[in-house]
Length: 496
Image (tube, rainbow, N blue to C red; front, side, top):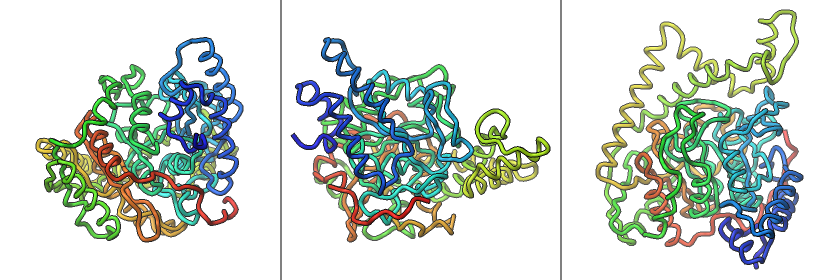
């Protein structure tokens, strides 16, 4: 048998069923992998070694006694550190929550426990999920396992890097405007953002509430679908939860693409700033779809180019409102000062990083009297037009495709001084987020530097099953290794 840390989630489940490996052995193998790699990568803010071993032992005892176990029994998983976990420090990558221990579990955390998954660590992220490179974490940056001198993408960079490096076969991320898909593309793994409302946001530390969505990372499509089934489903504690069945996302996985119509989004393949290597890899993937029997057509999302400016008004506006709760009074960091007003100002100044402050200021301005209609309200009108574009495209297509990100992973520090350049990484991801449709990234090759390239697939509302089916067909046809065989060659510099 291959080393346990190199097996997929499904393979680990089969190994346990056959008595070839125990949950305890699986967890120990992944703990060893974390110990061997994470000083260089920085994917995890906390390693939950004791809790993981205890949970694995309990699963083994139940299995030995003939008791039923969950759908993810004994499978290690990295959990983005923005989901409340009872009694476990949950920081959202921010100093303002560096000592916060929630008194309750997020719904997603509860469902993972019901499935008997084994969280092995809390994954690093850009502060409050604000970023595209995982360099905005208040603790340290995460490095890309393919090349330790490059970013893993963001904001769920720690989750993507953990899966790519073999620290866990599965990970949970969140996607507000590409924060699952973009790091999945840059780390060469599969990342799925479901339909808005498919997965409960209860217990997710809020960034932009009309956009935030929890999703899955894995090294292949089947594993990603398995994890999504475990966490999806309606939740009465989340008013935006969709009342749709969670199961069935794997029902069509092996049905191929014959008879499906695949729409190629022209605005995504013709825009400025798209790296030729990314464009070429995506076009080759489209050619494979045609060869596999899909009907490939060109489609237009005419308002998609306006998605980025609209997103960077809606997103900061909602962030400004959500982050107002961090005032030094109720929980989190408190910096003492002579007056309440001075205490709040000092707390927020010390607790928030530069990007969080930037978005709070932008959002506060956009929501202010005299500017609301010109900025936030206008952005919401653009959002409606983008949603209508998707609706029209899906009237003729089963799935849409295009690049996930305009480039492959860029060097650490390359864009930190230029916020607009950093925001541009989200240009192909934000339209699906604004429309609320499911979308995912699938590895489809590498560039001349050996860095992974992701193809974005987008489905209609609640169309995850068909989207995953199309992704699985291409994955099987390409036969690509979804993760690097080892950690990149560069020695890590000191954490900052």
